[in-house]
Image: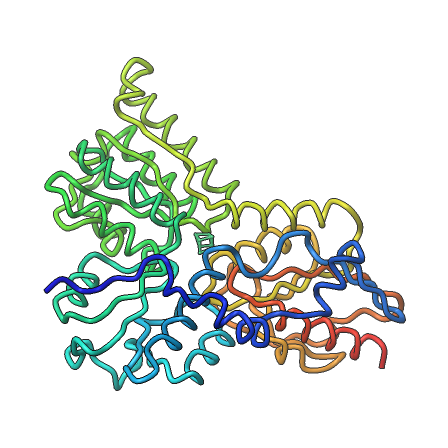
Length: 391
Ligand code: SF4
């Protein structure tokens, strides 16, 4: 029997609204917005970006998870893994009794048709969806519409024999799910490029060829099975993980277009090169807002809040770090004292501890948060900054 799949919620939006407000909303953040996104206290002046925090896709995913828990109080409810990349939200869901299939002691093999499984906002691979369907579980699909839009375009490429070149992180769940959409057709193929450097390498291969073995070794985790760079770069279509840096995605698209034009000529370009904008509007709005904030006035430093594995948060931190000292923190407790802060420097994998981060005298701080960070976490950061600046 095909599984029951809930894709539009479970008719309990009103029933969980109070719980969501209690767990994630913030009266202080609302009042800062009403005051022109400014907060002043003693020597501290704080400026919030005009767009920050929960995006529409995350809002919906968390809402559906609460609805699922409420609708099925007597059944075991699972998430395939983190619903979004925010430790606070995932902890809250665990506290509701929702279990995580990604935990070491859990296994897909033990699922039964009585179980309920929630699929995350960034989607799952086709293979995982098939395994869950075969188990007969009830599924609550929270895949964001912006991700579904990318999948639609990637499937179209695959049907037409166009290789999807995905600007993304091959280890990220969303990119893995998107890549799996390409390979469900006989001529479907993909290549994932992470940054300009990887794109430049592939563009050079398109223009001049090169060592096939070296190419396949370099992209061994980032290509579809049987990928042959000598054949499968003849027609390409660009797509993105939805949370990449907009400016970099546009640049990478232009690099590939130029390479295809150089190799095959202008007349063949439309047939050989395709592109469409797949950065989601929420990601773009948050990037635009932080660029606007940085341009609007001098800041002594930026604080960026969000999980270290949150792609959109890391990209916000990258934008800021090019202009001002930036501290990307995973949670409020990372701000240890007026002297010490734990943070992940932009472009580096690990958290470090920095001392002397808060300047003396009047201090102007910019603040933003990634799409998976709720307002009540932003409030706690505001309160800590206020406390430490005015001690
Ligand atoms: S970041 Fe964009 S694609 Fe991802 S869940 Fe939010 S709105 Fe959807």
